[in-house]
Length: 266
Image (cartoon, rainbow, N blue to C red; front, side, top):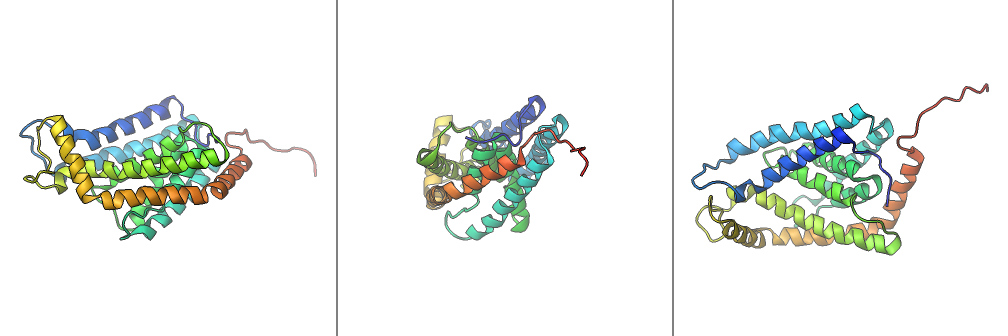
């Protein structure tokens, strides 16, 4: 249960839909490529970079054009995005430890799905700049993090311990799914071409899905499972104080409240 810091209206909703559709295509194209297709990361990933980042920016621009985001929401987005970006490097080289995800879960929960989407995108992009992690994988990471924040804002109403348990469970599932999405986007380029877990262009969908599952279990389960566990623990431990702080800040911000001036004499 939360406020709507960034309201999704017609144009902003359409922009978000286009971003998500492009993201689904970016992640899932390996499963539907035709036999004999030439696959080269150097030719695909840069185009996804060029396509996805402007569309992500279009979400914010559409909100500004429609008056769905105000200065207070931008300020809070900047603060939480900076916190998430600063936390991510703490997990560098530690198997599965990704402390930034609990910020996305709480932010999306309290401030709404539109805010959660932008928070995930801003935090991931800023963290890439901090860690020199800009590369062909960045669009996949941005979309994955944005979806984590977005769907946190779509969770049903709850309060107290039930809400904390729901958010912890969601955090675990979202953090695990994030890892598998990254695997899916990069699997054709990392799994080789001849092993039993390799990507086979043009193979039946079921066959490639089986190989992908085997690839993920073999290569990244040691990262994905700890990430899910750590995220659930962080969400549960920080849930009550962080949710209270964010809800207090949201009440004081009074998003979308009309501004006015007191003309009474002093």
